[in-house]
Image (cartoon, rainbow, N blue to C red):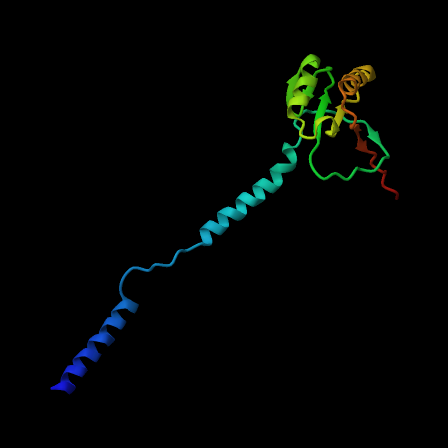
Length: 154
């Protein structure tokens, strides 16, 4: 009788194991679609990020100077071809420029400010903006230009 009880108990264990393996819902998560979506989003952001840096269309003058190495994005003041002043991408009046810069500058008057001027704008307008910044106490002001494209030699 003991032998028959052991057989029944052993048999029920085997059946329970078999039932757990072959039947029931699968509990694995398929991450392939998630990875595919993340890769597509990564590519989209990699393509669009350079286009979002400064949105004011300015035709920069060309120069032979090398590009400056920088550790983080500086503040950008742009003067477009009509003479309108922009702080980053936002149009701003000349009177509001300095208070706004003082409010958003993290390093105080040591904040790096890049002035971008269109090639067709009057030189005096760009110098006027630089003078306003300098008179306010900002000392790290730079002009932004494009590099001269070397002609292809045959």
